[in-house]
Amino acid sequence: MDQIVGGITNFILSVIDTGGYAGIFVLMALEGSFFPLPSEIILPFSGYLVAQERFSLWMVALVGALGNIAGTLFSYSVARYLGLPFLYKYGKYMFVTRHDIDQAWRVFQKYGIPIIFFSRLIPGLRGFIPIPAGVARMRVLPFILYVFVGSFLYSAVLTYLGVVVGENWDTMSAYFKQVDILVLIAATLFITWWVRRHIRLIRQERHMQNHE
Image (tube, rainbow, N blue to C red; front, top):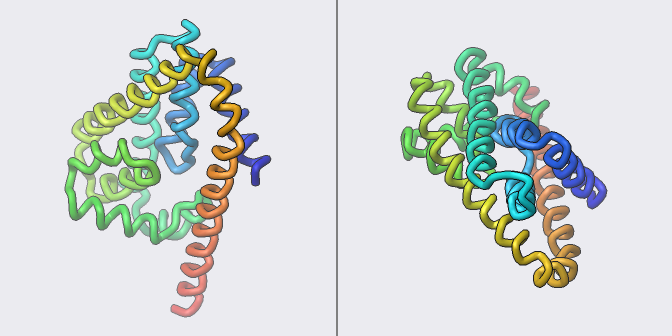
């Protein structure tokens, strides 16, 4: 599993390093869709490159927000035009379980349209909230506005953290070398839990469908 985590991290860093702003856009689009990548790696590393004068902080935040709009519009469109039956049947192939969809629907019903904004700030929830918004046929322009504002703020904060690290890298590098192994262990445990949880939910849903 640590090889998977390392491979994902290296892929993200390579795309940003070689693709520039376009690479950030693509990665953040995936992060906002059914194929989430950790923005907690994408944006801070981009911020580090801001400190190295490779990027502009505000351009990274803008491109990150625009990428998130593209990704969430994809999820929104699938939910709106193909509907819940399609997602219930085929979502499992993208690790989108019925449990995830139903949970996002309950949150959307409880908090209403503003959750589109707040969900941009909540890891794990971002990728699923566009589903109930699409099913409810929420108007596209307000949807885009909420996603943009939330994503821009989120992107700016995480990018700025990367800038701080980059500007103080000489004094902080020794500390980060000591905690690298802890970060790797934590990421491995989280990914292992997430994958096993989704596999278990998918199997449970498949079992229930076979007995209906």
